[in-house]
Picture 1 (cartoon, rainbow, N blue to C red):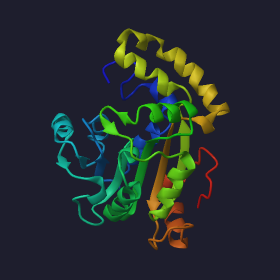
Picture 2 (picture 1 turned 90 degrees about the vertical axis):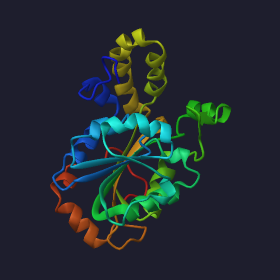
Picture 3 (picture 1 turned 180 degrees about the horizontal axis):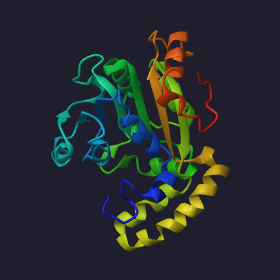
Amino acid sequence: MTMRHRGEGSALWYRVFRYRELEQQLAARPDVNRILDLGCGSGENTWRLAGRAQTVLGLDVAHGRLQDALRYGPMVQGRAAALPLANGSLDLVYAAHVLHHVPAPDDLLRQARRCLRPSGTLLLVETLEDHPLLRLGRTLRPRWNGDAVCARLRFDELLDLVRKAGFCVLEAGQYSVFFWIWELLPERVPWLDWLTPLFVALEVPLSRIARRWSAHGYCVAVPHEDRLPGSCSQATSERLNANPAARSMQHQDELPGSC
């Protein structure tokens, strides 16, 4: 986060990471007072959310990472499959690149559903295996930064999991056809960050042509009023139509089986 193109206000970063604008819009909504950064790690995403809501709580299974994240707000150690939070206590659950580290991602999603209030929102960002090089990389190296990759998902499989956990998908999209490879390099060789604008300029048109082979995806979803998987209930649809923030979210891709 210290490099010149990686700050919160970096327009370059937002052009590739298509969910970032949504992230900020959701966190700044007046009805969002309590946010959970699920699988927060060292707080890489918590710091962007801090100050956007009354409470931003971080949760991670690793005590050491939570110690680093404490500078951004309150933290709690726990497992995603058994969140130590009350039913209906959250307005927004944010989980970035967490599902693939969980042995049972459906349990995580059901826990998120339980802890969200009826009008709450789930924002998922996930590493996906639609990209053949990523699939190969995970086969050769089934761990990332010391954490095992337990769930290997593609974009349509991610959306199916979300719906089966009792959510209605509001918006979803894919991004990063090859930029995911590039962004690892400046972390190891910082001076390469000066080339980031060039690779962003290449990624943007490529993502329009080859988006279905992207390595990353995101999903914005809301709980079903009737708590059942399937199409959005009439009550849920009416609630979304009455919400200006929800109406502003336009589907970025054709969603298979979207409600």
